[in-house]
Image (cartoon, rainbow, N blue to C red):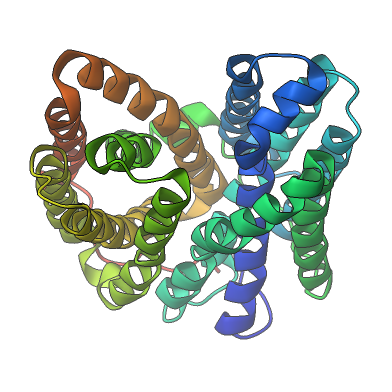
Length: 387
């Protein structure tokens, strides 16, 4: 079914939904020390809130396909971002760490549902001719949430972490809800997208393994990049934050540039870009003559990641048209799992061999992400649209 409205309007609506999902999930990161101090726990304990929300998000994403035949994508999106808003409001008034953890679990469920439904909607609410454009616009939501939302959280957090975790995500949730409510309701899918039927569909298991490995390499790079700048060049936290923000900005043109090729060459892009990312991150860890050189290499990696994320999403959406919500649920779960895998692999590599070993470890993850697509029985030809 095609959703009413132009591709730009659809893309902006889904961009807002994805931005709300992202910012609600990571809004605690900049204010963790304030939360820990206010609630009387260590920063290490407060940091586990991200683990709670991430696990909830991954679980909800994997189960989201079961709802495909019961509720339309617009309604599922509204439920998902509604849970984001409720969880964020509950987080802002939480009296202790236990209540805050429960509220963040609710945020995670909302993120898993809304993120999966929004990516699926990029295909369901667009025509084959406009699908890649709609997807590219929608996928700008998460990086824009970081680029715009995190500085606002930092400013508001100076006054109160409770104000920050309420105002920023709830504002984005309100905008996304208003845009979604302006669009017509959508019927449920003709078929339930259970996890077993999704993973046994031709090509999905191979694709999802590549997504997990690629997300692990990219997320792990993000986790340790700040420490690399500080420890290698003695930069302040503020200057490091600016450097990471500059690198993150380059993700956006990487996403947009490769849009023109994803319809016909998604599988080739997944191989080439993964290998390019492997070479870049290996150099990033081993060769550090100056902060400017490292910033340049990180920007290249971010640019590549923007294109690879778009290609990976497009490839997944084309694999099983009748199971799209289940496929995007698997992708969302792979994204969340990537943070855990990347952080764990990077920690072991850093402890054993420093940043050179870290770069090699992440390079191997990217090489692994290319392998499922080197020889694939599934064509890159766009799938025929459903009636």
